[in-house]
Image (cartoon, rainbow, N blue to C red; front, side):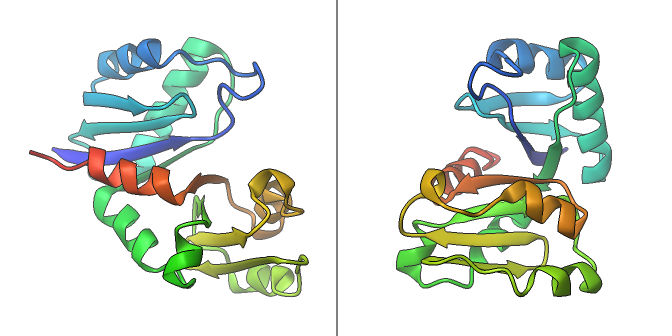
Length: 178
């Protein structure tokens, strides 16, 4: 059995795309996933699957949500080890790391796309793309930043979802298999 951390984007925000976590856990269990757990209301799922390919897990979760709830939700699935690698690869100092956002990308951006965004900068904000994660730091907080994840998704031609440091650490902790 493989353990996956599945991240949904844009659910239960501002009354849109409402997905009750108990209903989501039941749905995914009926779809053949095991030990389904959720963390907070923003689409963090830990589950087990016999599936060896995270892309297949993403597709299965995506289709289940579309069929059951009737709306499209971007889904990114990572193994526990992949999430630990993302956390460990953070290029910021430890102090900034604990305040940064991890924008997980659905795929490695192409070099041409990376060159297209390398000139983008915002006052008092920093970002770096390492492999399939965009690390973003702003002292003012995510809600007050000029950073636009939708624009980066379009320019990099990927899907993305962001989590803060505390959520990343908690998901890794919750995904420990005993």
